[in-house]
Image (cartoon, rainbow, N blue to C red; front, top):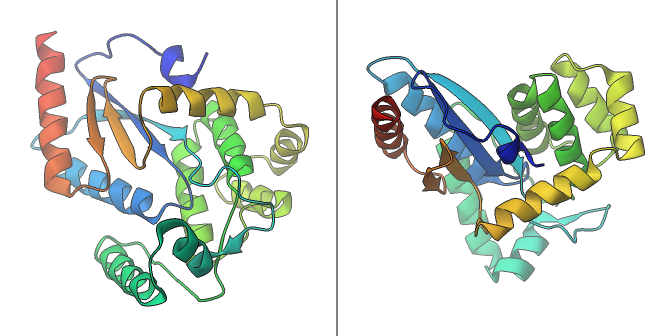
Length: 229
């Protein structure tokens, strides 16, 4: 049973359940999350949000050693080096405005994220999933760390209070590998083919890194309809 199914049912009117389908090497995923956070501060009345990060691999066939990011984007998206540079500049400016630092570099590599998603699945059991997700975003985009090595992932896990010895065992024995594959397939079958995707109370969706006002409207709508249920 995947995470979405595990808590199926109607959340109470005091809680909004938000599933965020994303990948840790997706810059728009952290931008979207920061916009979502901003929207929460704009609510007239605070609301409890039950946030769950769902796995999505932008590059499931990426080899363990990764690939140069600019080379990857040119090959995958057909963009020119100049367009890649412009996109980086735009993301950097937008990130700065939302309190997140993108530290792009020509030597930066795109990474395979399957191990990271397994670690995130486990972190959910410790109620530290969001903390780990944000640490992974920072590790990859700001610190330019290799997030596809067990040593680095264990080190990142420890920064948010997760036990390093257990994190290492989780990654070495692959105990959550099948669960992550099942969850990825579940979302793909529901036509989530791009990220980020924010699913509110398993009913309403916001696709992409929308602005805070868009998230605010959906939060208010979700809240009102939950109260009427």
